[in-house]
Amino acid sequence: MIRPPARPAPAGTVYFSLLGPLTAVRDGRPLPLGPRKQRLVLATLLARPNTPVPVDVLTDAVWPDDPPRTARKNLQVYVSAARALLGSDSRDGRDRVVHGCGGYRLTIDEGELDTLRFRSLARAGRAAGERGDLRTAARLLREALDLWEGPPLNDLRDSTGVAEEAERLEARCLTVYEDWAETEIELGRAAVTVDGLRDLVERHPLRERLRVAWMNSLHQSGRQAEALAVYDDYRQLLARELGLEPSPAMASLYRAMLGRGRTARPAAVGREAAHGTALPAAPRDFTGRREELRELLALLGSPDERVVVVSGPAGSGKSALALRAAHLLGDGFPDGRFHVQVRREDGSARTPAEVVGELGRLCGVRVPAGPVEPAVPVESTVPADAAVPAGPERGPAAAVSQGAADAWQRWLSLHRALIVLDDVPDEAFVRGLLPRSGTSSVVLTARGQLAGLAPVHRIALGALADGEALELLAKLIGPGRLRTDPAAALRIVRACGALPLAVGVGGMRLAVLRHLPLAEYADRLGDPSAALDELVAGDISVRLRMASGWQDLSADDRRALGRLAGPAQEGGFTLDGAMEALGCGERAAIRTVESLIDAGAVTSPAGEVTAHAALYEVPRLLCLYAREREEGRFSPG
Image (tube, rainbow, N blue to C red; front, side):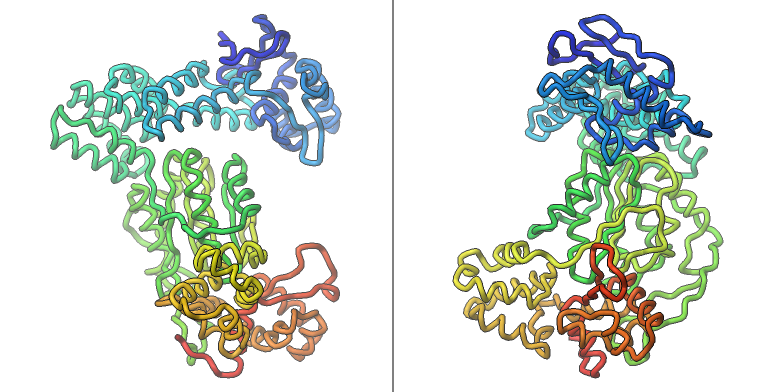
């Protein structure tokens, strides 16, 4: 049965349902949707409404193994049939399905598609819950669930592409059901959720959040023994099937039930278990990066992107961008959002085994002990006189055991979580931590490009625009003070290379030195020999951050960067300038410059240009630091 949309569509409009078998009605009458391949195309377009669907995705949905030579022509026939079924847009008379550079885009309204209505009701229900209006939240979430007729697209799941879309839809339905059940439990109406939760747990026995809600509903209904049995059964199932154990939050809930008796109503504890979050506080002074943030949010919201690399020079705001996105994506990752710092405070990298161990503790993954695989020794490239920390030890003690790696991959395959691995040193460090299957996503921040990882999506950060950098400075020193001398303020942010870290440190320093005229501070920063001395605020030093980035470069790259820093300070350098500074031929210069680009020390033009026509740049503060090293003026403070 297809329920009509909550907001009636105009007469003659087709209403589609994906939350069950693929069906369509017009004016209450079911419509024939054609042969199976035509329905596969229609289902794939409807599963990604108002979004371009690449032709390759449609092809894989219809012919997963061996598409015929006529595949594109056949797709055009199926799309033409969909156009005829949908009719034209009542607002502008245009076709509902159009072809563009990104693929085929189907335009459809909330009142014409159950998944859009479902999403709207769920969003409104969650917003009501966040306001504390639990009764409205429960009602709206229940309305959304009334649209769920069973396994989505259950008649077309023999197509791998459609099956993946269907699984994503079902995961959203399960998340909303969990939201609704938790809300009812908080309202003291646990009895209405018990039977439905039991049925869903039987169908999804490894979904921990369902188990937590079922435990709470039984406990609040006075059925403590059954609630405790739910935990015991789950613990044994995880140990037997996957070698894992319940999350620390769920174990804490179990202990609370044991100790408090029937009077306990630990729904809030269950909610913590369902929404495990281990994120640092959102950066309060986050400024700019609007396009990059929009792109990152879109990528992490896409079912096809599992790994995103955010790269840029030291101090460009990579961590702030990743954390900002993670804080905004709570609804999209019901199994948690977790942040792990890959480096120690001194800038040296932790071992992969340490990082896996922390991920295990955060996510409730039991990391088994056992023999470890030997790591490939890495020759140190840090000179003896370098006043920067040495890298981590490499060897058997630093490697990740196969059992630990398998346990982590099993957890990822069963959960939809967001993992932020911050300040990654190289590709080898994270390869075993990236998801091989499932719907979890990982954001990697790194100074280098991590070119050896594929397939991943990359977002490269550079300097802020002048307006964004001034906005950040105004947040720290006050807009009134900035308006006293806007020209000096602009000189300050440009002397900082418009890097968020440096602008932030400069702003913090000015916030303390209220007597210091902006023009005088701009003069100090404009002096190449003094700029890094001026960019210190308390225990935060831009020079030390530059030293940490310097540590990551190979000895050859450090030597080359020292020689290129001179011409780079004069507005960038060309390939001819690099050949002259390095004293080498064209091929050697190209390899050196590209190695520095890969390491994140040199930036290149965004568009395609020949090597001789390109103008290469080095961030100003990195230039200053490299000159210090080249001239032997380095000091660690």
